[in-house]
Length: 347
Image 1 (cartoon, rainbow, N blue to C red):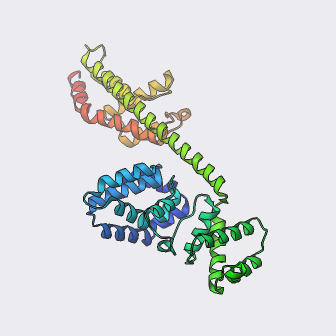
Image 2 (tube, one colour; image 1 turned 30 degrees about the vertical axis):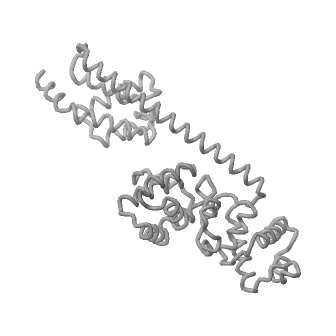
C-alpha cells in the first residue's frame, strides 16, 4: 500500500482510530510483533500491508489467512496469524468486517491474555461481546461461561433500565451463592466506569440483531469490493483502448495542419475525459496545446482543469485533475522537443 493511499484512508478514519495510529503504543505493538516473529524490514512491511487491507479495505478472513500463510515462510502460519491479530490488529479489530475476537478464541488465545488491552470501539457489539470487552478493559477475569451469562443478564437489565446503577452495584457485590458475582468494591467500580465508557461509544444489541447487522455489513463490503474491481477493469480497458487509438493516429498518414495539432488529438484520446460538451472539449484541447508548446506549466494546467467550468475551467475532480495532468505531462516529456523543432522548421 502506498503512503498516499494509506494517508487517504487515515484521513477518512474516525478520530479515535487516528489518535491510536499516531500514538507510540501502536508503533511499539508493531515492533514487538515484528521482533517476536523475526521478520526483516521489507517482509514486515508486506505483513503490515495485509493489516491495512483488513482495516481499510475490508479484506475477508479467508484472504487474510491466505496472505499471512504466503508470507509466513518456514514459520508456523497459525503463530504468525495469532501474533499479528493479538498484538497489531486487536486494537483496531472493530474495523475488520469479520470477528477478530472469535478468530483469536479459535486460535487458542485466552480472554485473560487480552485483559487491559486497548480496543478502539467504532462498531456495534452484541451483549455478550460487550460484557467481555468491558471486563477486559477493566482487567476483570470472567471465570467461565456461567459468569459471562450472569454478567450479560445484568448488563441487559441495566441498558433496558430494569435495574438502576445502585442495584447493579449491589448484585455485583453480592456473593455468588446468593445469585451475585462476589466482586470486590474496586472491581465493581472499575466495571461500572468502564461500562459507562464503552456504552457511550457504540450501540450494543442482542446477538441476533448483531448477527443481522454483521451479515448486512459483510454483504455491503463485498458489493463495494466487486464494484471497485469492475471499475478498475473498466478503467484499464478504457486506458488500453485509448493507447490503441492514439497509436492508430500516429501510424496513419497525417491529415493535421501541424505536428502539435496531431499530438493534441493523440493526447485527447489518451486522457479520455468524459462528459465534455463541444465547448469544453475545445477548451481541453487549448489547455493541452498550450502545455505541449510550453506556454503553460504543469501548475497552470492543473488550475484550469480544477477550476469551475463557468469561470473558464473544466470542473474536474481532484482525482481526475491528477490523472489528466499525468497523461499530458507524459506526452509533454515524449513530444515537446519534436513539437519545438517542428515549429522552428516552419518559421
